[in-house]
Length: 138
Image 1 (cartoon, rainbow, N blue to C red):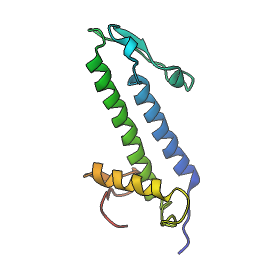
Image 2 (cartoon, one colour):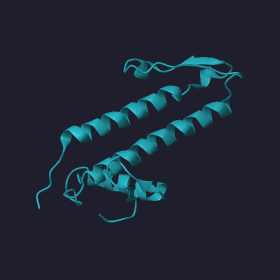
Image 3 (cartoon, rainbow, N blue to C red):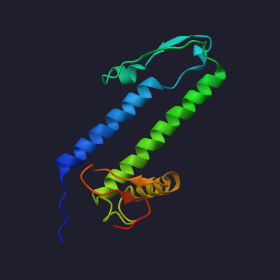
């Protein structure tokens, strides 16, 4: 059976994932320690240059604890994107031939392990197909 890859569909899903990642991170950028005491910040130039602009106005001044929590949220957003990227790759059967010999296989295996650890629910990447369990073999 020959594997047919719909590159247009995959690219659309990857673009959507990247857009969600950038949109989320533009609101939760890495904050510097010198921002303690401020009540306002705008998103980093990295996001502005990609069309994602945000200005955040807080009721209370930024604290060191706020910066730590914001960093945790940013890390969570990044991990979520990696897990979803793996799901897209698995759903479209892009991982079958990687094995453990091709360059990048360790990184792909790490993505798989992250997904298996962090997801305990269903992962459906196409609205037109049935949902797929994270642990279910296709």
